[in-house]
Amino acid sequence: MNGWNEHVTAALLGTERRDPPVLPEAPDGGDADKAGRLLDQAALLAVARRAGRLPGRGAAEAIAPAPGEEAPVVPPAAAERLGRILRGEHVEVLPEWLDAAAAHGWRVPARLLPDLLERGRGDRMLRPSIGRAAGRRGVWLALRNTDWAYLVGAGGDPGGGAEVWETGTRNQRAAHLTALRRRDPAAAREALRETWAKEPAPDRAAFLATFRTGLSPDDEEFLESALEDRGKDVRQLAADLLARLPGSAYGERMAARARACLTPRRRTVRGREQTWIMVEPPAAHDEDLARDGVPFHPGGSFAPGGGGRPVGTRAAWLREILARTPLGTWTDLFGLPPMEIVCLPVAGAGASEGRSGRDEHDGDARDVHIGWARAALKQHDAEWARALLKGGVMVDEPGALADLLAVLPAGERDAAAAGLIRWVEGRSELPPILERVPGPWTGDLAAAVVGTLAASAGRPTRRDEHALTQLCRLAERRLDPSAASRLEDLLARRPPGEAARAVPRAVPALLTTLRFRAEMLKELAP
Image (cartoon, rainbow, N blue to C red; front, side, top):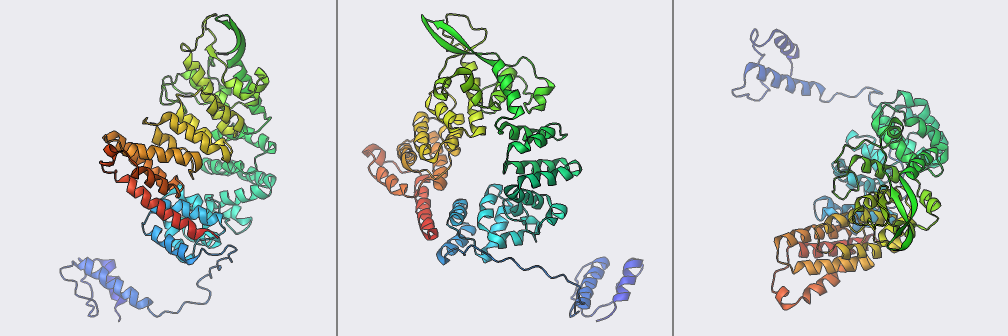
């Protein structure tokens, strides 16, 4: 086949001035115009010219082989089930499969890694689980496909040593910095300090987030300087990290502000003298407050943790300050344990003497308790979380209480969550609250969920059926699979009036998923 130069000449002159050369080997172009026929023939000639050409020596750089694996591959039955999940069968249990495999020391078979990594490309929530179970081969693949580079930032080892910090992508460099923080936080901090001024704001935020690993008082100076950063996300991250540092100057500044807002006062109400918490929210929002990460909320905004109620500007500032104040501030100030502090009556600083103020100043109490709840969550303080959950002072804030469950020791979590479910049972808040309760749901919590499911299955209204469907979708992923038999038993023993009604379709689907998960976990058990 020849005529390449003739085709090049025709292309340069244009087909209006010169017809495309005749190429007998080309397929019939039909009604294609001259330009289209020229391009089709040129494509055919290009393939023919390249066919059979031998690569020159050193033309292609050899790809480094994948590193050896330490973890064994999952058993064949588990691998087969993973393939079914990736093809769409009960795909909602994929995170649990990955986490269970990693917990038992298994890794994903190499043949399934491309499909798994591609699924993580579109599902950010799945990426940490993929990082734990993909093994070294998964990271090796991710480093060779930019679409899968998220895995490097999801906890995988980027490989390549220190040069990754100089030449890698943002995800690779963040992963390198995280790994270095685990081994040597000071070295990681100094490496970032050297390049800090040259990094774009999004990269500075990503790298500063790695300080969550190995955070210590040695990081305080660097974080304080980051409070002056040009990037809003960087400043916010620095403030959040400083709020977690015990004994930091940041914590002392917040404590001073908080003590100016909450003061103890002895009051006599109905002939009884007791300690009250008098509340005076901040009067103004200054540059120092903004520097320390307290945002300016417009009046009437819906501040985080507000339970959907409008929150005034000053109340929003108060919540932010309390959320960033070391909780030890209050045990020192009141000389009481957290359980007694959260039960102290609360009133606005202008409340009149001799009145209870409980109904009149519910808003003040709500702001204080929400601020404390957010502080307990940030500082991971189980004693304060326990006090707020059991003190009965946040009954109108079930969402904030649900967030605190994660702070409790594992042995207390199920019973506390079950109590919360019983409190809100039958209300529309139940599915959103349970969304915040991590799985697996076992013990008292599983019993409460099963009881709620069985009771809801007998309700005929469309609203109840919608809530039941939402609850079933959550339970498919989080309810202990062993609860399937209890649910079936309760449904079988429904009263005659309820038994005559068809069970909503979401319930049989839940039972099918629970059985699937039971078999899945059995296959992954060592």
